[in-house]
Length: 443
Image (cartoon, rainbow, N blue to C red; front, side, top):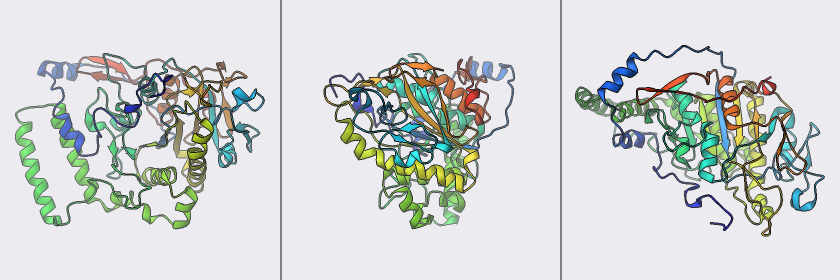
């Protein structure tokens, strides 16, 4: 750990709960809380007020997460006229809209007319885990409540399509904050378990064992259903419900040729795979496009490690070019397929970096102002919302909190963030507590 780092890097790319992949979640949930019958009766009797419903503009979302805290100066909010110790090691690139982006974003500069940038995001959490929680849930961390992630809420509210999991993590879950929180683990993410950039990429649990034919497969399914029914008649719990939901979804996924084909990157033309990049960013983003095209509602993609306390120049040069090529191609690909208007793309990180370069030629954690990018799904094109000051140290115009981002994202997806969900049978909790709709950002 860097001496100036307040986060816990050992947990930056892993989750203490383990990987919640498609089948393991159900089994793990059996160790969780079984609600008393009284609370269940109270939940059934609770009449929450109805909320306004919205027609979705976006039918899917790709959330690209850059863990570690990407520096706003080197990415979405460069300061070309600041002193070198603030401007940083790269000369910013002027894009097609006249706005500047970081010096390693030459391809993104060419598609700025298709995306929006928010340059005034702010919150107060400078530790990795707490900042990550903010940006995956729209809530500040609480010692009393584990809040569900965006993908879990979407899964809970909208359910699956075309036998595909509604919420998929590529390649794996990097933090507990991507999980189901107080909602059932049945709504948690399906983690691939391997990287699409690997030469022998396969998705765990996607196919039946080779020695199991269709008849034997169905016979086993029937036997499992009989056993499950026996246990369900004796006890009701989230564990049993989650296992039932996950096994049912797993069978549908394994038995559906169309669903399994969504994961088949080899079906893409070699030329397009090359254009995305035969690397982690390129193949992850391409698979994300395949999955939303096939029916997945939310794909959460993690790429890189952006915790650059030292040598930010070398660190950016090793990662940013892959992201630059892959992200630009993703936006163009969605646009060419007529999918951009109905696919929301969000690029975020847990916080930004300090405006001034430190003594080790890096930047430290900085949540007071940073940037995110959005595209498609009802968002304006070629638009910049909010503004940081001349040094990139404070929001100067239109500060945006995680709850504002979450409320706006949910509205575009047709989910009313004021709807209340029930925690432990008795406590109603807003999908998003507070926040404002960023109407200026909506096309």
